[in-house]
Length: 330
Image 1 (tube, rainbow, N blue to C red):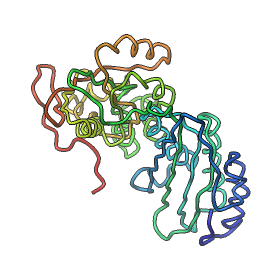
Image 2: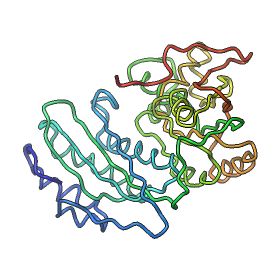
Image 3: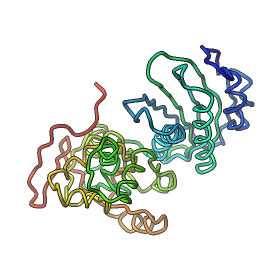
Image 4: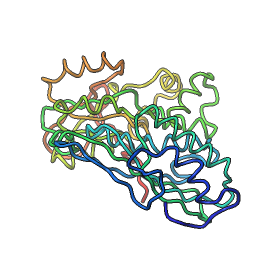
């Protein structure tokens, strides 16, 4: 981690020694050098992804530091899972306002430590700087996959079914709850939805198990319709999605009972970090077995066909027009 502007207290290098060096794996060399050493087993490829998070854009500024750190790591692990890779390492860059003291950084590092234990990853290094603007983070995650086994967005074929893990729309609703919406929701449902926004569950066990099953895959970050559109564009195909087939949680159903018109927004809301993939009908039984083994719902929500783009259909097969298929920064 290179030298940058420092704040009060421990300073940059003191923070690295106290909070981040204990997170380093063997390749990180105790974070005492400007680079790391990394080995890749024969017959494997490294899968590398990077995502950034900015306060007020990707998380709320008053979110707990440990949850900010864990979300930052998890959204990157989700990208690895979407290619069928097993997570191994990560690099971290933090740009923090000087007002963020050592206590904030300690809590942030404790969140990383918790998820390192859960997902079996280790820190290799990175950078730390000060900023007058909002807190900004960038994390690069590194995984491994058997050479040729990686699952890409390209590869979906007409006749494939479209599948998605878990439930859709919870994070979108959780953010609305944090902003004061859905005030009549019961406390347990509120907590569940908020948790889905603040602490996504990357499907790191499912992703590698879909190697050889899924023709194409990505995670749901921008919104199910938008991300399926990415698969379609890369694969040169089109898709239809059935709105009634979307898997929704019990908490989401509580909200939809009072506002059924909100249903289509769940397909465009984003931040779910579930796996969205295309697979042939012959894979139905294998996917069902995976679902049971991992105790993770995996639902078929549509089909791949010729053409381009994604169409959202109601229970009668009529197309539902949406203003936007998902999140866009620009």
